[in-house]
Length: 217
Length: 217
Image (tube, rainbow over all chains, first blue to last red; front, side, top):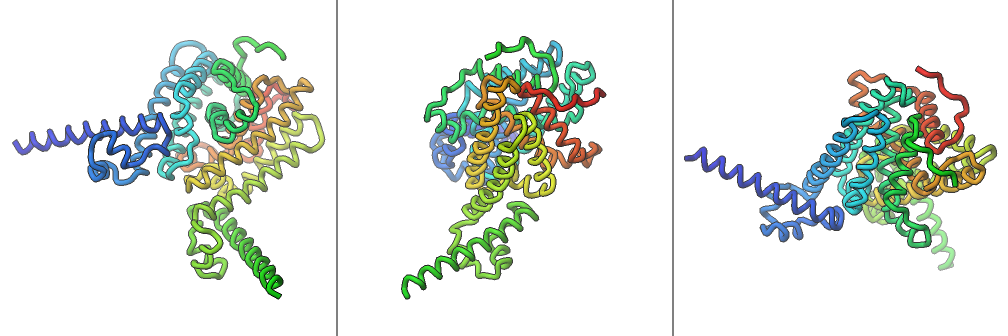
């Protein structure tokens, strides 16, 4: 009996922890990490703030876990496309398009994950996940370089360049100063334009053939 | 007399403030923002911690100012090369080489400025300075696109890609997970290799002619 009670408590604790993470993710997707306060979250979940602190010792550690859950989903989605079928340059293009579309659909979340100023614990996770993205690109670049479709020498460095370019392209236009600039008269590009410009940039950068050269201005 | 006394005090305050910033910069260049504690800094400057707080209300605001001073120097150095003489693609290449060399010489500082997990006030400044770098690239891309040497459509987006690629290339290899990977057997590239790979990546990405195609593997 004692064992069953303990197991039941562990299950309940686990279920509550998942509800907390899920509610926290919804808050971040809606208003960024700035909207993730322990009190508001406890209210969302319908528990006392004290109970919340029994599961997460600080807002920073909660934010870091929410970040990891959301980022892992993006890494998995990108990995599925980049390890799929087709030639390496097609998979690179398709991966970028998918990543851009997901970021576009959840812009507030994308900004929160990539660039929102937030607790140092989240910054630590950012470094870790940038490395996870880089690993995916390294894998694909090695494959494409072996086939001669990518002309790259320093594969680790080129992978880092791709990670940086993608993050900045998708979040640069969404960052507060960029938004301000847009409000001052810059036209906002569409997802199709952003996606095509990003794919062109990255394919050219790795010396890959373009699907079709974009029309000259 | 009252006026002169006040003016003298303002001068002295200003001089002390500059000594504080300079000592803080030395600490960050040596050990990153992690090494920037109010107590250690007060000791470096030879003042009481309380006096330090009269000039900077918090460690975050001090860190943000140190960040801004150091970043502005980098932006100015890059601007001097990119607005110098020569064709746009040459100036882009030269600007990247100079930026890479400066980051290489002060790797600890470069990591602190670009990626070290730190107070949100510094993250705010990071967004601001990424925009300042992007502005420099936009200027050069517009000039090169008008001359037909850069084939880019979405200039704002391409500028953001360049900023991201450069930051990640120079700091990715310096970040803690990347260093760990290198210790596990990856060879560390030289400045010349990093610099050439970065220039090749960026020139190709904007559709510019390369100075000389690198030898095929």
